[in-house]
Length: 380
Image 1 (cartoon, helix red, strand yellow):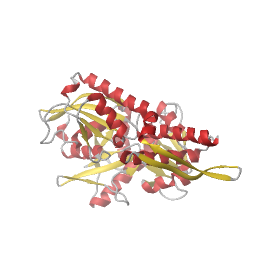
Image 2: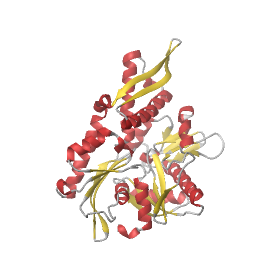
Image 3: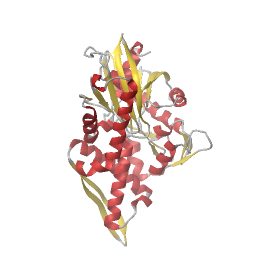
């Protein structure tokens, strides 16, 4: 049975085969596939890394970040935030789910999500050489009931029977071995910081079941918001040096945002990185690069408010569990945003607990979903 993690930025499909985890990989050999769909003039939609390459050339017909608006109306906060940061156009009427308008028509957010899930299913079938029609699908912990129900419908549209919809950090807990041989039975905080949401769960394994003691988080806080804050920093720097407002150019704004994501990742591996977009600016027949020296120290105040929100949400979730924070065995970090050193340092400093750091945090949720598909009795 497939374990599916439909992510805001990346999506992953995992399967347990002969007791081992395997992934539906793309043409690059990667398990984490960009959650991007491009609508060409003719032919089927393009999905994943190839679609992501077309964001610069054809941003009006290349859709990303759609997870945030599944089941949401055009006037929802989620839709307003998404529209503010993308080139493609969102449309809608009343309480109906928001749609995306591209050259080939209007597509509901659920339809685009189904395209992503269908692509994962087809990649998995190609990898394993057999038909796969059942799945466990994950959602953010604060997902409303109607959106959870939508995921079942989206699965059907993708040719899948969704047998279970499970919260992402609960799936992450299973991936981190909470029900394994090394588990002590002490409660653990799962800190799942992805591209679109922060999902928090205090869990404990007892009596052969994984019990959820408390859930919390922020469904408007994720790695994309770090990129957005970074983009504002770049825009301010350009205005200060050239008096040019890059926010008026939708295509350039998207390029800046994408470059911010890449440099953010580089800063997770090194204390400094080069921010460069060649010949991005022009005026009176001249062209200039956008080039900035960027360090972790420079970015710390840019991201400080976002990191503070994450820590505050974590405190509230631990408090809601009714347990003494000192009784937690560890904080398990999953999700791509936990790569950011500033996030890890803030969590460690705030709670003084051991950090259980996942080697591959971006695939943990899909692995947990696949594990639950193989052992469904672990959570009732």
